[in-house]
Length: 263
Length: 263
DNA sequence: CGAGTGTTTGACTGTTCTCAAATGTCGTGG
DNA sequence: CCACGACATTTGAGAACAGTCAAACACTCG
Image 1 (cartoon, rainbow over the protein chains, first blue to last red):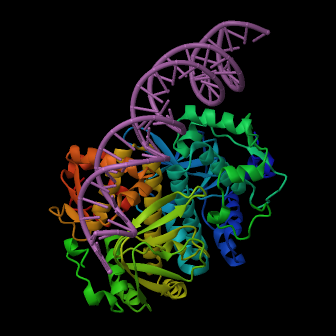
Image 2 (cartoon, chains in turn red, orange, cyan, yellow; image 1 turned 90 degrees about the vertical axis):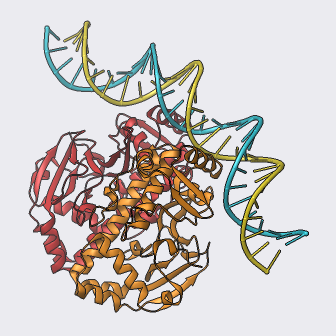
Image 3 (tube, chains in turn cyan, blue, green, brown; image 1 turned 30 degrees about the vertical axis):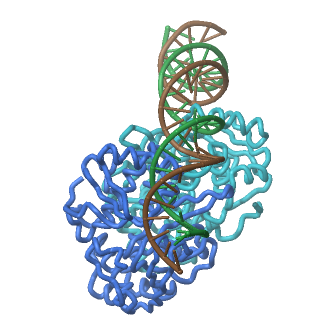
């Protein structure tokens, strides 16, 4: 099983090694800011406990007292809340390199849960250790802070997405975001097909739409020739029109350099 | 004009004095974390340029290069985005004491704008100065970081609000949030009536609903005996039922102590 | 008084939801 | 190899919720 073959990232045993989580996180950080060698080394020195989380299980549960944060080494995860009426809403999706609950660093409890959408390899790090690093290196603190601010910018964008756009536009927008984030560091222009392990129900809960309706929306998007979605693969048939359909502007992702794929 | 008379905060000329912005921000910070005297003094030493912004004008425009952040001394503001279709979505409302664009501290540009919903008194502070303070005092950095994380938690909650709840629930939820935030530091149990200077159209753009529909929702909420909304005043008639109607849980606001008003 | 803005209401339209059932896919075990 | 269950996708039909358009009304300010 190599779900990320399309991204040319090989995992296998390597993923379980100690240094990998912080390395992969370091790569992510370098995509949003300059990271000094010292800071990179400091990150690599973090004590990481790597855990294999099966699909559909919580990585961090909402309301839990949090003394750790985690990096995603492999897999897809999502942060979500459940309403009193029992409906689920995702507020972000996370992929390899992301730190889904760095948001909890200075909160006692996390108000949202993070659940594994596929099998995930997760590296846990103690808050105390991260804070110690931040005190020693203000530049590292700044990069991590920036990371959480970009996360927040994604939340804001999702508020607008779910609040003001119609269903097709919402889905197109989400596809654009995930496509850029999945492709980013390598950013292959030709890379218009990648693993998409999410079910329609999960997509629905990200877009604030019923799963039945998502199905019809996907049908329409296929008919429009925007995307192809089958066998757990998302193929983008027409990037420019998808961007237009999704009213997408990548500014809110705050990549260090504008991706080679102009939009 | 004393829009905050209900909160026993008097402004008038005092508001324009130099130290006030950081003092009011300090009070806000103390509601979410312990702030040492040194840090409080450091905050007070910030160079603040106080500006009077008329209603309906941008305090910070989306996309602008940002070298400053601001504190709201007086008034209501909202962070918002406008979609390609010309629809506006608010992602948060801000009141006296808030720092609407502290989110921009480590971003080059802000992806959302912040606009004044009433006349606002705003104190601008240079990013560079805040960063200098943070380097000197990691504890102050932690408090400010925490502040931005709580902001992000509010965005997440809004995603869920707009994505999964019906219109009445959305509005009730928003009223609960704003009510707690407006009342917080003093937290008067009897304080169930306060200034609400927002128009129905603005409320609509916060809840992802048309203004016509908001009008009907308010009518229903009045009929249900939950709230009273007139003359720019929001009166809460039945707090417990409003909390139930809004499926509201205040955890995501991360107040230092649970408000005296149990919910 | 008139202009401008915000609120309220009605009638109609349209998107999306819910319920329900059929179909497709995959892995397990006989 | 097939039967089976579990899960995901697809489709239909009717209902509910919310949007649009349009007009009347209320209020404030100069």
